[in-house]
Length: 142
Image 1 (cartoon, rainbow, N blue to C red):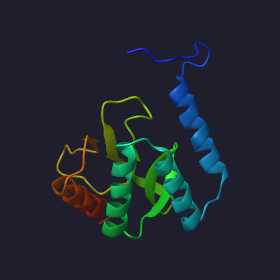
Image 2 (cartoon, one colour):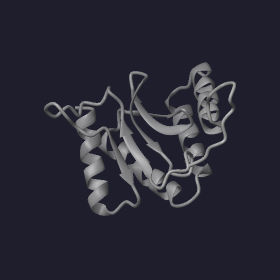
Image 3 (cartoon, rainbow, N blue to C red):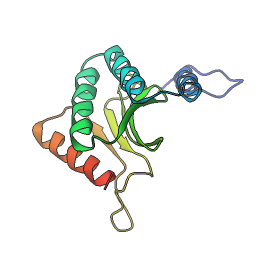
Image 4 (cartoon, one colour):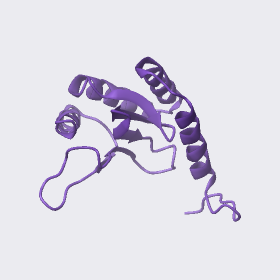
């Protein structure tokens, strides 16, 4: 798979764009309302089916863990606790992947023995997947 890369920086155009988004996020001291506004704006920019999945995930996270703060993280919808990202949605289109991803940071309380999953590939969301993600988000903040 070929991606446009600047030989001097070693980063792809997508990686440079994500770093610029992150720098912008760090410069802005956003409150919860601004964070949700930014998150919803990023979701609105997504093409289908990523947009529909991101909207559903936003609703699932808000219902499962209302104390998490919506925000963006490297230009992606994310949810944080005390300023630390707990979980995030990565659209398939953003990194030209064949599936979207819902992931958890090391701040998530998902530890299960010596090995556990921290991200999940998403091609569609049915009621079964929505229930599983809701349970994982609840566990992540428990």
